[in-house]
Length: 297
Image (cartoon, rainbow, N blue to C red; front, side):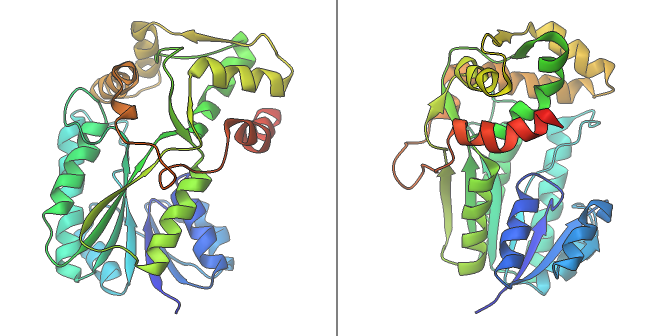
């Protein structure tokens, strides 16, 4: 039976992929975004594209009321002067809309590390959102705790091309779970369509195995013809200044860097890896099918 499904963050790396999967299966898909210009192609696939902000309770309520299920998330705001206050405001508006609408199935985009509520930067907000969504009554909520997105390596293509190195503020040799967003999207789409979860539950999505940043960089180097490409752990102060120079709010930068530097403590490795949490796309697959074409563009 085909479902009517709402996707928030439809312009994002996960939401956009969920949309394609569900539309290809013939479901009625409602895509919401503040800027819908990027969603024009989805209309031709049959999507109902609507303009709306995640803090617009009235629009969210009306949209949720029509749906069988919804994909929700906690979007970043690089201009937020107080990141946690911004996150709490968004979560509060989202919960109000869910309550008012009567929708009964929510898939929430969370993250590995969200079992902690401090010392993990941005994930403090996703952890709090999990707790608050769990307080809803008569609503089934599935939290997808995703590993580190392999797509994050696309953000440093400029550094690779300009400086001949890859680098972030994260430790080079601490292995963490990494996942391709296509795998996350396929799991989310399945739950949204099948409504196969009850109560409040967590689904870790951990990728095929753990990788170090150095190892992943070596795979990138081999694919792009730079076999000696090095991963460099960049000084926190240097990374922070780069973000500030690009107009990113200082509190957002602090949260982002706290998350990056805390990875070495192991909070990303908290969830147990087993068959149910492991996904198929390897780093090699991702580099060849996603990174390399992006690099060549």
